[in-house]
Image 1: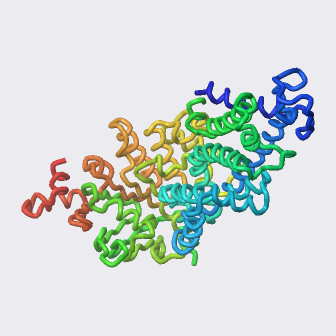
Image 2: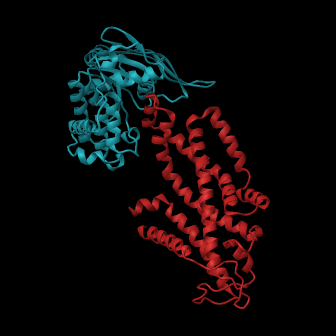
Image 3: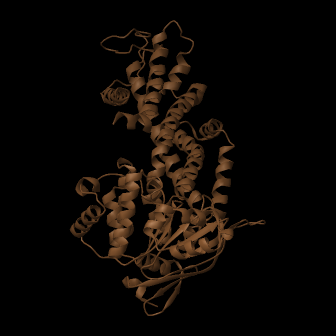
Length: 258
Length: 274
């Protein structure tokens, strides 16, 4: 299991390093060199407009990473505090938070993201924000369930009796117990975000060819099946990034790896 | 009002009509009208079968009942000068003062009473600091002393450990150290040795015996093991179906049983035999 973790961390590290290297202009069109196979000048070849696929992949990588970070931070920063408050306070506060959560959860995240990005445009930030906002409900539910369980433990009840401030109880005694199990979900939700963003770009919302996304690359080259490398690179990128987040955030794997 | 309870002087406990019901339209009675007097230095064992209401009695007494339950009655702490403090109606600050000054509690499952995400050092240190202003060095030294006093000689190694890294017996000893280190005059223990093997059980009982005797503390000890209660306590209270069915000194209970065997309850009968 330690090997899986090391491989996952290694893949992410290599991707970050490789895509940080200087690359050509992803929007530079060269019609004299279209659909070139990999070469020294173009490590991953060129597309049907003669653009460097390596440069397209690099831009797509950073945009995808921005989406994951924005969506994850939004979900965690909204979902975890609300879940802690709902689980700990119960009563009217709990009812209000859970009703609002249920309302956001009945709208499918992908559909909400589709509507918002159609209006404001597909940027990594807008997509990440919407995916994060509508994904926060699951964090609220999971955090609340864990908080309800932990607050019944004697070490938490003792703090209540000792009149320890509620914020201190939540941060010192409840949050550490919530964080571990949530990490597992964090991995799968990050992977889901990568796939959702690729999906949004694929269905044509990221049509600005000067700022490519991996999903846009798949959409653009979907008919060029006689040049499978053009489909392979973005597919491989999406797959690797999704699986890497899934493995890195799995607490069971990290525990076994110790 | 400041009473002697803050100074760890002799404190008596007087419980009158303590009842616990579930809230709602058809409340279930979980504890029915329990009275108890605990004099300074006295040790009372509370026995009964599983689900009889022993732990519920301790939880109601100490304020550990969940909000879904309605606790009625009176729990009074009486200090050496005769001043009385009511525990059930005390506000949060009073309760904190009374809890840290008068009563220490040890629960059945040390794994749930110790915070699994904090080291022993941090938890024992926080407990010591509840009672006295101490520097970091003093906390460490006092922690090592208390761990040694409960038979954990490798205290330095244990201080950096988390509860899950210790065996059940070691965890229970740490819990005993945390219960005793505040010096409160009343110790409340809810089946603290249930999950332990026979040897660890005997060692923990010796610890309670020794540490309570050393501080002249009174003890409320819940157990379904009558032999343990007979060894540790001078009085006994038998709870059955949420009510007290027998109470008094162990000798009195034995005498009553011998003179009136027809009235014997299941538990006092077993106690007599043990």
